[in-house]
Structures are given as C-alpha cells and as structure tokens.
Length: 243
Ligand code: GEK
Image 1 (cartoon, rainbow, N blue to C red):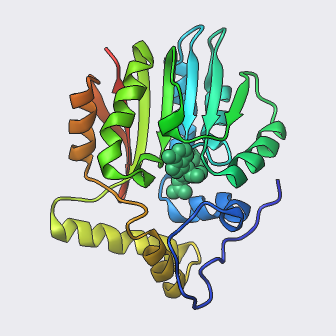
Image 2 (cartoon, protein in one colour):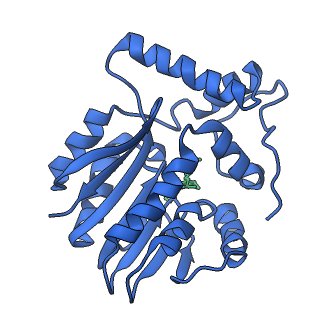
C-alpha cells in the first residue's frame, strides 16, 4: 500500500466534526502513528498477547479495525487451530482499503471483514477481542451495553484488549499530559495549526475517560481481572479477562 502523509489540517479551514472518510483513509497509517504515542508498541503487543491468549476453535474480533493493523497482528500471533478473525468497521471507505491492505500481506489465520457498526455485530464464541482506540468514538451512554454484549459473546477465559486515549483526574497531570502529547505531535512534524484544528475536529467526537472509569465499567460487566498492560502519556491499553 502506498503511504501518504497526513496534511488534512495543514491549511487554515472551517473545521467540521472528524469523520473516517476517504481523505482520512488515504493518510490513516501516517496519521495514527504520528498522533498516538505507543501505537506501534501496542500493535506489537497485540501480536504477543494473541500468541498467548487465543483459544482453539474460537473467533477473534477486531472492533473498529480501520486498515487491519490489529487483525494482522492477531493473525501473525495466533498459534491455535481453528481460529477465525473478524475485522469490523462502520466506515465503508476504511473497510474497502482494509481489504486490499490485508490481501497484500501473507497471513496464516483467515481474516473476514465486515462493514457494520459494533452495535450491530453479533459477537459469538469469541476467544480474543480487540477494541483498539475505538470505544472512545462511541457515545458514552452506549459504552456499557456494548461491553456487555462483547462479554456475553466471549467464552470463559477469553480476553478483551481495550486501548483508549485517556484523561487524568488530577487537573495538573491532565494538563501536562496534553502538553506532552502536543509536543509528541510537534516532534512528528505537525504544526500548531494542525494540532489545534484536529483538536477542534475531535471535540465531542472522541470522548476520553479515565483509566478508573474504564476499569470500573469492565468490572461492572463481569471482567476479572482487569489491568493496564501498556501506557504512553495519555494513551493506555487494558487487558480484561472473562472468568
Ligand atoms: C487500529 N483499531 O489501527 N462501529 C464500528 N467501527 C467504528 C465505530 C462503530 N460504532 N465507531 C468508530 N469506528 C485501529 C484504529 S481508529 C482510531 C481504530 C483512531 C471505527 C472508525 O471508522 C475507525 O476506523 C476506527 O473505529 C477508529 O488499531 O483513528 O484514533
């Protein structure tokens, strides 16, 4: 796949709400690696976790799969027989590009892609589920019901990997983490104009929560144990087990 640079917000413009449209799809790998601290480590970690945690004759789900980075990581990591991977995304442009992306890589565990929303996905016989930076785009009141239906579709011993942008309860730490995240983006070549216009586009579209809110909700659903396995500035990834 040809890599294009993300310069969507480089010129001054009237900023509308962020959408996963063709423009974003065309620059997505560049956008996510330059914007999310630790993204590549998390993808590598998902491969390692998949090598430990996938379960024979069960399904894996990559919910909000974008261009399939996590689906491919699961496919590379999986060591078990009879495992199928389902990549789900409600952006048609994303799924179309994902299809050609995935076809371009040799992978041993089969991956099926579906253009539908997580809310409409029937999760069943699941052994390993990834929600990589996707729950944050779902309206807060809907998050509990989604996690419940994920939990209900999982077999005992299955794991959920939940990666999210996070906020901190302490105001000063929160302000400093945002500052450091903006510096991370500047170090990756984004201008102050790009950073502030993207921030405006994501306002009320990407709604982050604290790690405690995530852990409490996962525990309320029934996951046990739940713990953080990766954190880089204001981005964290949790592992949650269905007992
Ligand atoms: C990665 N996981 O590279 N149903 C299905 N898909 C959705 C929904 C929904 N309700 N809401 C948003 N999406 C990927 C990165 S990106 C994160 C995930 C980011 C999809 C949306 O279309 C997009 O492709 C993805 O979730 C979020 O590991 O861009 O910050």
